[in-house]
Length: 114
Length: 113
Image 1: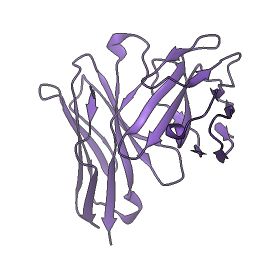
Image 2 (image 1 turned 30 degrees about the horizontal axis):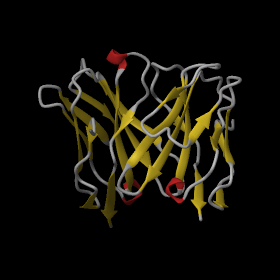
Image 3 (image 1 turned 90 degrees about the vertical axis):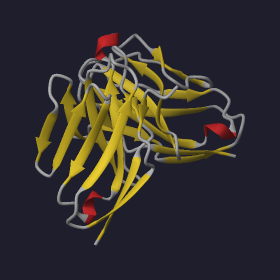
């Protein structure tokens, strides 16, 4: 049973427009969420995170929104740039369940078209 | 600063052979992890270690073993490789088991034929 779901395998966006990547989770014990970005032939790199005590965290062009009641989070990239083209993984930290590693979604491949 | 290093970068392996993927970090991180990435399946945790001397099973541990004799090294061994273990393997580390900004290696692409 998948605990972190990214239901869109891919997304194409025009350069300069907003990219919205979605993520749903099933376990209400998750209380910290992260987004990772992965380019081909490289390891994933940390992008942005959010704690469950917040509903928004912003870092430059990247903003993550958390809706705890809906068990949903989203990553907004605005404006989107061609260099943002990558696979984005949503991850949940089950801190409330002890020292258990991150749980990742399957990823969404973002293509930003110039 | 090297960070986290994996070796080899890629490998073609005959089925039934034994193989150890190496992972070394120089950040003095306590926690280390092994993930595999497969198309359409994302990153799946194989094994992890919250601190030297301890290991735990992840989502897909069968056919793999790990050891954590010291802080820096976390090798992953395939005792008898099978084609379904063809994948890209990522090693990662984090400062502590509860500090989850994990740092990933560049990956090892393994093909079992």
